[in-house]
Amino acid sequence: MFDTILYQIEKGRARITLNRPDKLNAMSLKMQAELSEALWDADARKDVHCAIIKGAGRAFTAGYDLTGGDSVPISRLQTENPDAPYRGSRSVDDDIWQLERAQRYRMAAFDMHKPVIAQVHGHCKAGGTDLALLCDIVIVADDAEIGFPAGRDLGALPNQFWLHNLGPQWTKRLLLTGDSISGTQAAEIGFALKSVPPDLLEAEVEGLADRFAQIDPDILTANKRAVNMGLELMGARTLQRYAAENDARGHQAASARAFIKHASEVGLKKALEDRDAPFGDGRVRIKGHERRDENDRLIDEE
Image 1 (tube, one colour):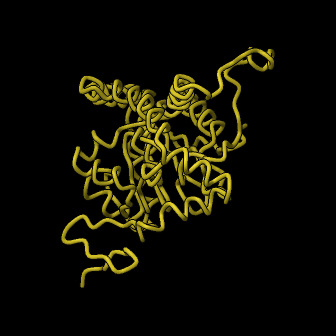
Image 2 (cartoon, one colour; image 1 turned 60 degrees about the vertical axis):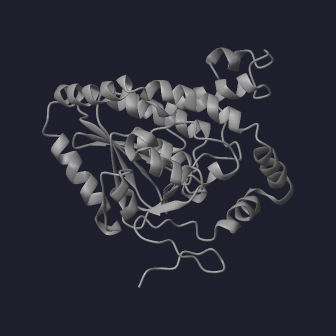
């Protein structure tokens, strides 16, 4: 049915697995489109009470696919008229338009009526954090690695739910540096509902889905939408629209242009390594003094 995700319905839940494990589930536009389609299908089915989003292999997702990945026609009409002058990404407005297009795919997790659980393990970086925070509940493995390192040079966030979950100070601390936190730390500062040992993550998520399965989906919907309406009254949806425009602004920065040029010369993997090297291990200490060694690696407290 899908090329980049797995979709399964069982026991009152839809399980959606990001399925590009060889790419650490990097989210191409096609994956985001397929994810949206699966979420709306789950929302329409009377035998589904909730959806679970998780990743195959070693990661939830390492973020957006910076190589471009699979393309998706804007519409069926574009497929039938391949020579028509459709938008690309040449102008700033084209960039905003394309960012908003992809954002609409991801917003399905927030907009659909039924609750969505993010089951996060391994890397949850950049776009992975965007996707997780659009879900209603985030449950992470203790050793998950969470952060938005792309904010160091490539632009801003094309979604912005960090503020509503973490508050302004931790949002700024993490986004202005691109540093990372563990799953345990993510639960401490509000990114996640809770963290659990990796071997218990699936059982924790499935146990919550079992409880949702005992409740009338219409009741689940009523309660989710009331909370989400509260977020919207606080400006959450307006902020998402602004986030896309702000990311396009960030794409104009000299560092973003320099990164793209460097990646074209040495390859994406090497360019990412060069960008992140000055930040050492990129870890954050939630409580206490951050002492670092000569390689900028965090010194563990004794």
